[in-house]
Length: 81
Image 1 (cartoon, rainbow, N blue to C red):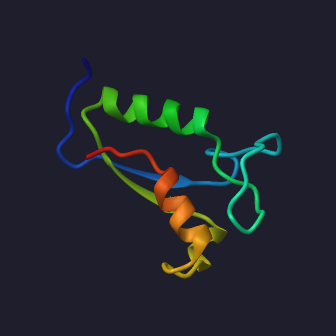
Image 2: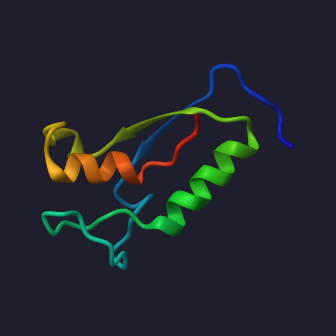
């Protein structure tokens, strides 16, 4: 098992990391979604180092927290708790 970090934070741009031009998943409003396989790789990698906080950066930051696409993004994020 990897070394545990007390204050490990991953800053991540969603587009091109958690999805690509070939990603078939879509948000509720029809935009390119999150690729579950890429989320799994990210989750396993972070878990290997004892967990971390994830800060997502994207054009998605403009979404309203009550909107369908926002809820989709949050539900697709790996649970590192």
